[in-house]
View 1: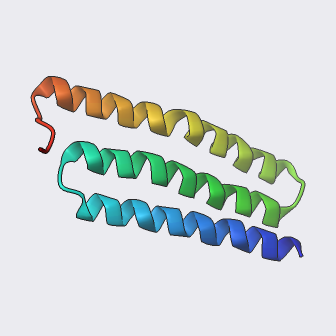
View 2: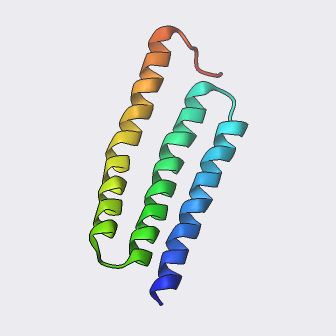
View 3: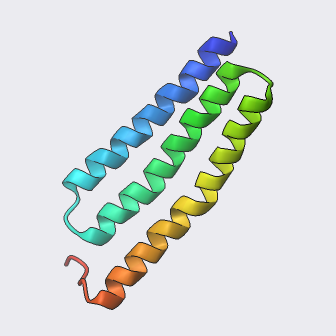
Length: 96
């Protein structure tokens, strides 16, 4: 049963990472691409890593995976915000 729960988390994570990559390819300007990448990729990576931690069971490795997931939760939105803010100050105009 644990394998099925882990598989569901990993499949959902894969889905969100795919949505992020499609958003980067399909959306019209830099800011909407960064939004799609930042939100969906963060959720997708976290779901995938949580699925891997569930699959691995309770161990030191799963604790490290959960700490990596926490780091991604904190660092990815801050990084995308910093990049979009720098692009705005560099003069990249939003799509209209």
